[in-house]
Length: 293
Image (cartoon, rainbow, N blue to C red):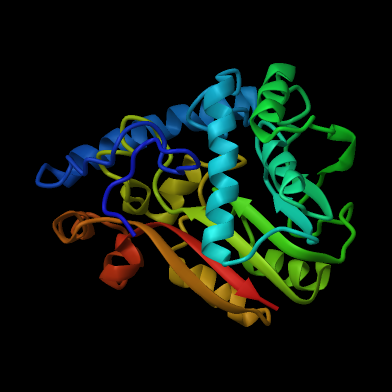
């Protein structure tokens, strides 16, 4: 558990440490800054589509290799599982299928990925070549199942799976509870979910300074900034509730935790219902949900 987060391998926080430097300044200033950038982002994504799920280019090959290996390492650590012999499903793999290659190299029996957007269909071949060199084995993409689907139905996906994973994906899902219910159908008895979740605003320039900025807006204002893939603003307690309500036994592994002085300052400018939320839930910025069926 940390109170700052750098651009470490697999880090969801994105480039640079979280500074919380907005604290002590006018909340109205940050409300206006977030609104302006949010409306601009919404217009851009509506025109161009959702193309950039990571804070760096997929053509940064070595950085991308570090990233996917770090993601797999974190799943293993947080779930306290190894991947050997497991049938694995990943939700929202993003611009490449590198995590699948890592899991297969570590002994997974099979790997399938499901995504709303076809982001991994044009990955730079140099990435897989570099990843294979790091893993000591050729990346066989024909061993990876890649499904473009809709959530929560995932009608194109067939189980059973022993492990379902995701990294910085679930915060973009519109109906988390229904997704967990569908995953309960797809996993084998005793199956596990391990989802790393990024509960911070995703807009660069604001993210490191005011990570709870997206909680400042009333529902109708936030709706005006919406586009496919906008964060759903759920907190750790919301994910726990959704998991337990659909038959999972769940726990939270904390990662990035905001300091008290930032949370106390930010709360004064938050919209309902966030302003009255438990301080610990607000402070938990990135975390992993681990759940067993």
